[in-house]
Image (tube, rainbow, N blue to C red):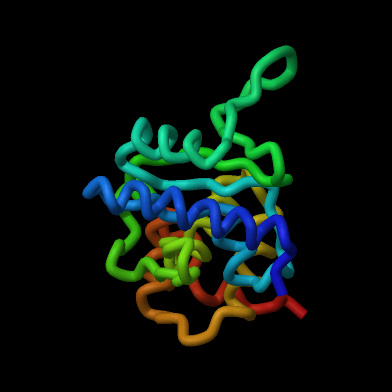
Length: 182
């Protein structure tokens, strides 16, 4: 179902999350392409794990303890962290989940046994985020990601999702835009 690098990255994220939780802080939430890969069962893959966490400095220290390093040198400008054994990086992209618009009570928790758990943004919010990026005109490919998520995720709260899509697109789009055009 998932590629080995993705599973290994999830386990590392679970250990990082446990470190923050043990220190009394909210663990990071997986957003972006990593959440899309999770919810599509690997049908859409990513090159990094985008994370939302209010305590960036603590998160980055926990990431370093798991063996991640910040790339440096010519043509290595990045805000993220890479692990020498993975083909995936981690990057803190926000301090609040979708600028505070997402309902944190809808975050899903993936239990990974001894490694701990990973918090993942709700699929409804991920779909709304992709629709917002599509509506901005800067990422037309995000419509297909939103449609893939919509078709693969079960048990979606359609009322909440329509509300969130409308928020993210300034009212220009809604559920009707997720229907396959064929």
